[in-house]
Image (tube, rainbow, N blue to C red; front, side, top):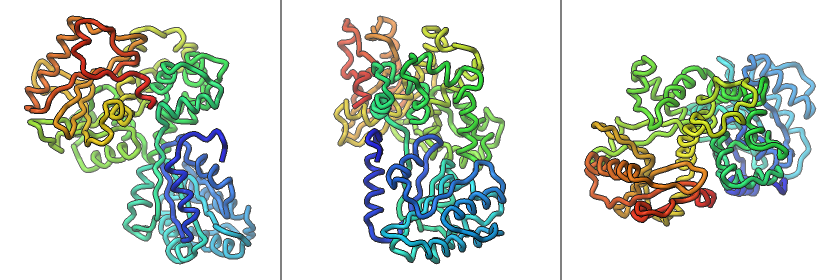
Length: 472
């Protein structure tokens, strides 16, 4: 593997175990566009595949069959274009049986959901191929990969037809953490202070490909202008491409995330339906579930009278690139927008919200900093239901009957708690205790990049989490 390969330790260990298992393996790899699925598989196996094919985004049935057949031609196929997927897989089986090999035969099908055009019978044929041939051979590893996460889960991982319980392993590839992003940037010869790494993460999330577009000769602001804001930029159309790759009918999902993008603390299913003028139906529930699968939104249950109520679950947008795009998309093609607007209220306000999401995405690191690695916790945002409306950025409810009430602030230096801020924090805490009727102990906790400026109010804060803790 590439000596500069970053992270994915657990996934690499799983792939090594699969390689060494000595039995037929069917592996489903999924995760959002540009997260590094293909790179992981290519790197681990060194491109040594008995057969490899890639689906065509938005291709027709004929185009997908042509792409699959072209891949077979590369390993010796000389027949005509198969008319059905059953014929195509039968031809592949014949080819692989004739192919001389030592050790494992790795069959790799990338962008698998693309092959499943309407009424094509692709999944049925794939199931037949696995059940009647591949699963009976100890030398075969079948790896299928796709960005359409919800499709992969419904049709491969949780399929109720021919592929029911047939996958032997699943690998869901998540985004990089802050620490992994920092390491990756260093391989690109980008040696930025951690605050700039945090700011890149606010914009791009932990998507390796997006960061690969950076130039070490440019500042962060110059890079963002070049890859996003300028005309014909490489990420200017990425928002639409992302959702088109995740979902075969992306428009309903885009409408949901755009509504959630306007509501910091999230909305209930009923509130989403009301905003979209929809019935709160099973279709909406399924769409929300699919967005959860893709880590675009998260579902959390705020506490009412100390007990969670599932029908009062909130859905909150957590994908950082989506949040960035929804905030600044109207400025696309505005030359040098980011460089010219640094320090303005629009960017400062967005940074405050984006930093909260960075913290939510690094709850494991926050737990570690609080010494909670071995204690069960629940974490959620909270908003009151009675006036005056109070909101708390993050609540960490612990099994030891304590609650970390977290205030999250993004600053360029130490944060100073003022008299009014101290009162607001105490009022929010009181509102939470009153409405939740909790009997847990309350621990005031602040999460800021550089900690708190020491004054008469900071001494009342029992825990401080800094930017460095998020890199642990």
